[in-house]
Image (tube, rainbow, N blue to C red; front, side, top):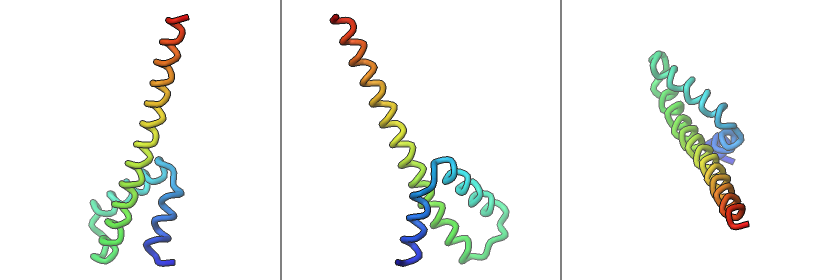
Length: 82
């Protein structure tokens, strides 16, 4: 298995909060400016993957909230018709 696939799998196992914390840590590293070019590129790539993971987690949460809203509306409509 190649290194990129391993990194993606590690990220997929992170919670939203864990991924966001790591992304903030990467941002801090960039702001400090102490990284080598190679390390900065690697951090950037990981940051992109973390950002996508966080966006995916947020979309999943929004979908669940929307489903709850629809179920509540349907339930309210049914009660009004009874």
